[in-house]
Length: 88
Image (cartoon, rainbow, N blue to C red; front, top):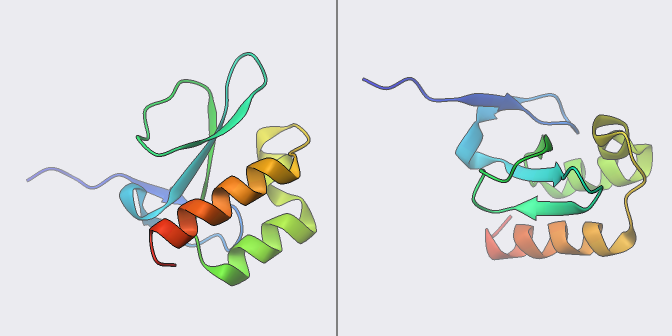
């Protein structure tokens, strides 16, 4: 039986299966993207996709701290779009 990979949400610090979380990646060239495949190279951070969690990472800049860079409003809108796609 294969062990499920778990990651911690940046916003609420909840430990969940990797496939339940949304991965945001800072690539080597500094571009921030939402990684729907979970395989893009670069520094990654995970959020659970709950509305409260999303509001918290935006308000407290926890995602910016995790990725060590400033995050534009466009990236937050992309994250919100993925949350809507997943029904969260």
